[in-house]
Amino acid sequence: MEAASGRQLLEALPQHPVDVVLMDINMPELDGLQATTLVHEHYPDLKVLALSMYDEDHYIVEMMKAGARGYLLKSAEPDEIMEAVVAVHEKGFYFNESLSTTLVKQLLGQSTAELKNEAELNERETAVLQLLCQEYSNAEIADKLFLSVRTVEGYRTRLFEKIGARNIVGLVIYAVKKGVIHI
Image (tube, rainbow, N blue to C red; front, side, top):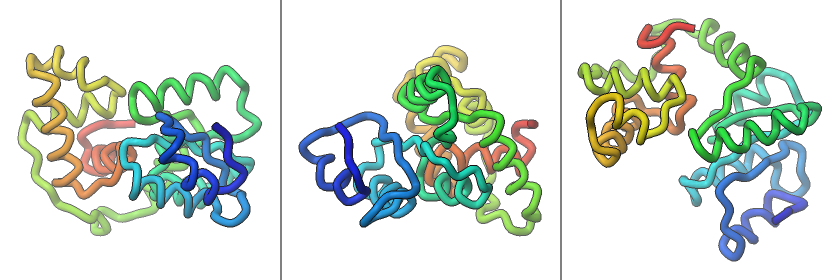
């Protein structure tokens, strides 16, 4: 399916369900940022991968805050685009060097006093968070921690609630700020 605007995308989704959307920022009627926000609100399981010509940090950060699961430049090689689509579909997110650098710069620009939530995680929640940040799937985490996939899904849901994150990027940012993982 292809849509020329964010509005067309939102109108087409009920008739043409998809797993991953490649979202441009610069679109008529409803731009990619607005469309991503609406997709995230109305189709929370639909994954958005931003594909844009803009490489400025503020575009990347705003798209990730809106719910995008990754960000690529249109100049990316076709193999990287395919890798990103597969990663977003299978793992829920895609980080390349550019995105990681932007997010780390964003993190380092904020003081720890700006943390939204001072959630206390137990040992099992911390272990699940660490594995999520290492790009393990729910099934892989279940195998590593000797849990059922359903139990891992429950931990994942509680992590989102406790931390106040809207997507996996929020979990990663929290984990970096709190020293759960190190970059």
